[in-house]
Length: 120
Image 1 (cartoon, rainbow, N blue to C red):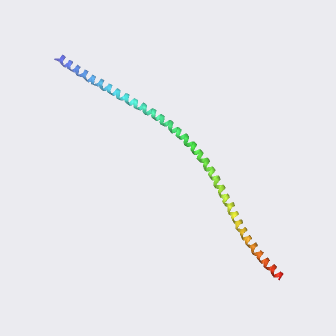
Image 2: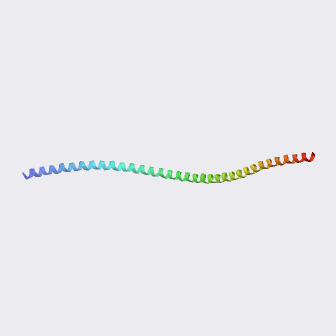
Image 3: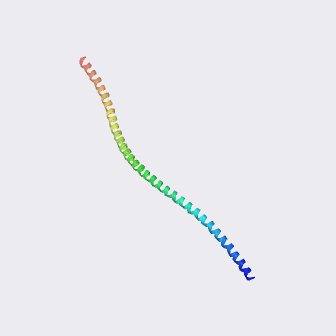
């Protein structure tokens, strides 16, 4: 009878061990899958990091170009302001010139009238 219990105990222990081994193998497979997924994710993150660095370089270059364009636009804006000032001055001179011409015309008429009076 004790032998019977011993055999039964031994077979239960063996069955439990087989279950544990099977579970261990199953867990090993799951860990292998997880390891593979982590490796893939790590590769992707390295790939993303290199792309981020490339984008950062491009943005730096774009910022530099925008800075140059901004400087050029500021220069052009200053030139446009100067041209407007010069145009305003020219317009004032032109307006003054028209007034001067009108005044000369009036004076010519008066001189003509005075000459006629003298001739009479």
